[in-house]
Image (cartoon, rainbow, N blue to C red):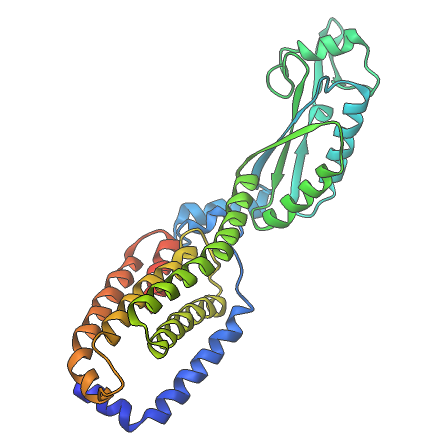
Length: 327
């Protein structure tokens, strides 16, 4: 430890310059930082099954399936059908949507002596009561695409995995314009988008709270503005550099690594407490680091090693979480 202290003391200007350059580089990396786009980013990219999934989607136009539930007093009324048709046509024009299926796409197969007759289940918007009853009791679609009481139906949407966030946002904007109907969302695209939005909200809400709480505790225990300032500055610098590095290497913010700010505040604050314990204005920094720096240094090494060995995990997000925290 004495050698490291002497080395830093001898080349302190070089250390400051190198650290400043690295800090500035990571700051520029933050502008490239993105949130995860789908939950499939947790899957191991090297897996042959995961790769096959993406290949099939690319070659055959697959995608994530979402369900838009629609409810009203009568979904087969002229006004309801007009709104559903308008929504379906609007969704078909959204980028990233591979296919859309609604009650308007359902076909009615009728066996007759002269052969099989195929007609649209919904032939027109102004349905009679007999036509509505026929649709509600249809053996192929009742309880599937339309409820038996005619008060609920659904639109099934297939969205490209890489276009989910933008497509879901446009779909919801489109649906919000329609009045008189009640809408519900289900399926992977909508769940993924909700989770991603929740992660963004949590980071924006929790990080300042954790920072202020840490500031309060350090101020209470240290009662020294210099110690508090250095401690908070160190933690904030760590968080900025980690997220900047994520932006540089193209690692998105996910459910897993969104906890990094709170974790770094907790871990780094502990080292600050150990570092400044017993430190005063009359203490020689060099002697203090030579004596007290050894346990702190090895404590940091063991903590970093523990997180780093998460890289053996198969899940991509957990593997990178360990690597990023250990840095």
